[in-house]
Image 1 (tube, helix red, strand yellow):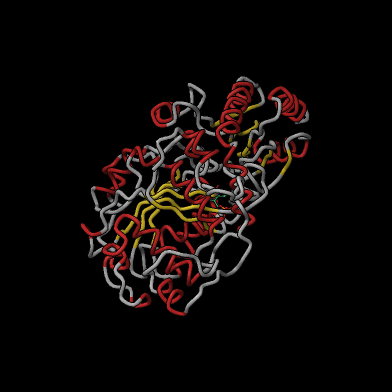
Image 2: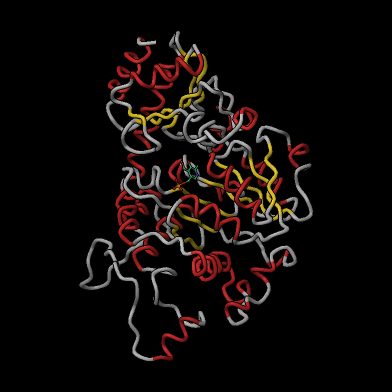
Length: 426
Ligand code: PLP
């Protein structure tokens, strides 16, 4: 754990050069690593020694960046993955198997909704989606004896629901399971979920962390706070010997690092969603300026939200920085310095007006992305959430006319001028 503050960690943590080594994190663009004896490498395969042998499992560039994100979140161990999807998949699959069940907020990103509701279901892991605004008693009805985790997003994409962390942590912990929180949108600059009871944090680093729309990536961070041994019967994968690793019991051998060690040495070994060292390097460059960019994204978004909120052609707007927003109080409690740069809103005139408006934008461009330096825009019902039926769209907080607008770090007046000319076109 670092004693430095977050903006210092973003610049200085991770890569620690020794005498004569490069100041900048090197890209270890090598699939493999050399040893002098058969015995030396054998001990690595047995997890008896620390060291690198094959990049599918671990790579020094990737590990330095994972270490930085670990410190940013205040965790005990972390790993990078090749995408945010892989991070969320590993985070759940590391502690669930066929016959198990998870509870997930219905407002999560469409890809996570599909992953849990469709793909994991095919693997025998069931998911109940819950309305994050329900009270604890109602939410508790979704929990089952075979529930192994509660999953949510700190700021839901694109409904921009702010997670009531304390309620969700109570839900998970009163049923002896961990709370997994996808912290992609606020990033640790604006919210550190471990402070509010989350046990595992995931990221799509593709978004603000990279920040320049250059490299798809993900990360999982473990707080080390969940006591797997205390609920050993629920988590045999961590608390019973792993026959595929010569009978190692992760909790006994690795203590607080058990969860990430298992995800690395077992899931990464077998499923192989490792980022390229080059992508990890690019992510590290992004992390160095993350606090500066997040602050600018948030101040720009606040100005844009206030402008839209006062506009006669806007039917509704979601941005927790607006005092009238449904989630303003939760945002003040959990993210007092700001939420994120993403706003969602509806123009009057529904889906057709939304499409005409988007096609008229000039500076803001239509891309399947969010949370990078350039202002961009997307129509969830036609794009990221296209696979959902109307009922699922409503549960996800996505109306047919909803527009997701990701405010970049350009001059805010230029963004507002672009919005104004596009609103005049409808
Ligand atoms: N989680 C959230 C909140 C997201 O917004 C996304 C992508 O938009 C993902 C996870 C998936 O991440 P990736 O696209 O890096 O696989």
